[in-house]
Amino acid sequence: MAVIATTQDDIFAAIESPQTEVISFDVFDTLLVRPVLEPADLLSLVDDLWQSYGFSGDFTNVRKLAEARAKALLKQQDATKTEPGLDAIYAELENTEGVSQSVAAQLKQREIDDEWRWLSARQGIGRVFEQAVSSGKRVIAVSDTYHDRDFISSVLKENGFKQIERVFVSSEFGVTKAEGSLFPLVLDQLGLEGHRILHIGDNRRSDIVNAGKFGLNTAHVPPAVFAYFSRFSTAAHWAASPVDLSPGAKMLLGLVVNKCGDTFHVRDWDNVSTFNGDLELLGYGFLGPALFLAKPDAGKHERCKTPVWLDTIRTQAENSKELQTLLAAARAFCSEAEPLLREKPLHGAEKRFLSDAFLLLPFKSKSARDQNALGLLPPLPADVASTRPSFARQFELLLLRRLIFQRAYIRLISSRQTYFKSVKSPFLRAYARWAQIV
Image (cartoon, rainbow, N blue to C red; front, side, top):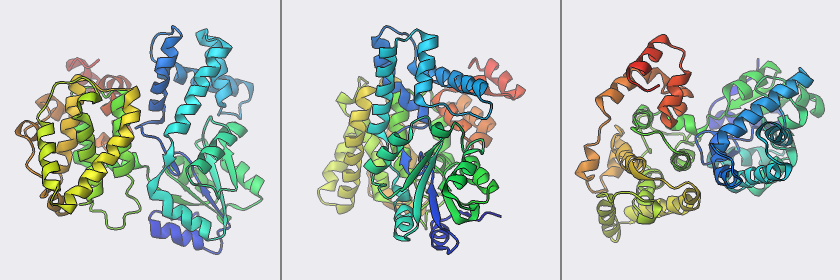
């Protein structure tokens, strides 16, 4: 039976175990993160290039369909293969969308460049990786990805993971962790039995269950997005959005999630807390977005009262080290968000909702730690403090509460219409028709 580690201390013990010869890391959402809620959201950055060549519509959906067709074609050619590489995906784009070879090459390079630019090291995994390296044991990476091995190796080194001696990618072998066929190949190439490897990853099925089937010991590092949305008040607030979140909004929220949801390594996290009383998290994850969204040059929108409230904090910070820490973290968020949101600006009602949301969320916390930190701030503007979801959205949340801790909520907060089109429950389908959602 494979050992499953679930805390940072458990992982350290498993790394130091005499039976462990190799420490294996998943890549995406374990070692590296993107500033998005779902990986495909980053593809929206290619929209402008796609449309500049006269193509209409959303590049993200076109690219997803090309990937699905490439997978189907690969499986027709070899029933044991399930994972095409990026070249095969863009070849399918040429075949079905009338894209020339030269244009397809430019689109593919833009996708690669965007990944390289926006992938960054997951902060919470740093100590685990350092422990793996300092143990003197072999360190490898195993990833389900359409990118090739050279790209993954290079981007890992670029983000500080220089001591990984070997990288295994599904696109090279045509099989994945998700369907369970990549781990036997890894074991065969390393010449080891499963119990000699500790595999660390974020996906419970791919990295834990499937690795365990082949005898690997495993450690589960939950993705930041799940930790962030497992706080019910946070998830419920976003699910109550009166507008679908645009690609830019999801990127903005992705930055916050990567910082404020990456908490598995915090030993004393208060489970009812929103930011654990941490002034840096409060500044980066809540005050920072509000500060950014209040800037006149962050997109056209109606002027709200938030800047006055923020100016009060700036004035009070002159005599408060705590508020100076808060503002420094907020400005750090703004500096990271500005280049990202320049490509996908926010507008109108969405912008106002987001601004109010980031201010409201910490004040909804029931944690004494949070309340002590919030005591440093002036009272919220009345128009923000009184914001409530409509009765219809509150009723909807009661129906959907069971989904708050499932991946489906990401579809829900991104697009209600897309979510309700996908539900199988006759009751929810009937509700969607009655509420004129679909």
